Structure formats: C-alpha cells, structure tokens
Amino acid sequence: MNILLSLTQALCQSPWEISKDDLPEEYAALSYLAAEGFQLDWLGKKLDEVKEKKKKGKSCLAQLQEMEEELKPLKRKYSEMEAQMDKLKAELSAAKYPVSLYDDNV
Image (cartoon, rainbow, N blue to C red):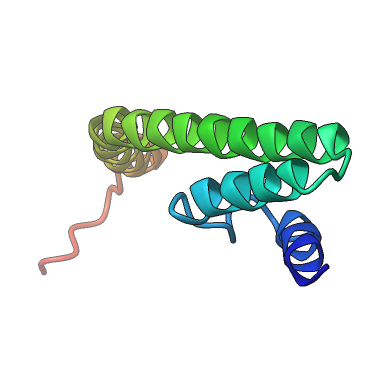
C-alpha cells in the first residue's frame, strides 16, 4: 500500500517537480502493483499524461529559449532606433524655435 500511496503522491506533484529519473521508478512501481493484482490502468494513463506534459514542457521551453535568442538582436536594434528617434525628435524640437534677432555673444 505504501507503494501505491507514494505513486499517487508523486502524481499530485507538478510535472516539473517530478524528475525524469523518477518516471521509470513510477512505471516500475505501477508494474509491480499490477503484477500483485491491482487494477491500475487509470493510474498508468495518468503517468502517461505526466510523461507527455514533461515532454511538451521541455519542447516549449526549448522553443522559448530559441525565440529569446532570436529576439535579442531585434531588441538591440529596436533600442538603437529608439535612441536615434529621440535624437531626431530633439533636433526637430530645436528646429521649431524661431531664430533670435539678438546676438547672445555681445
């Protein structure tokens, strides 16, 4: 019964909290319990769900990291363009002021 309890407790965790090394142990525990006569097909399906979620999460994480790497140069370019725009806006603002007829250097 302790094996069944530990197996169900493991399934109550987030798939991220279960290490990939724990999954084979969980499947082994399930096989052991099935060999002892427990009807745990539903539990096997839940283990398969956890395995799929871990696989999907790993794939999503890899895609996110790849996208972040692709985004870095674009962010840098965006920042550079924003700085250029701010400079041009300042020049435009200065160009809008009328020319003074008074000589400030006198």
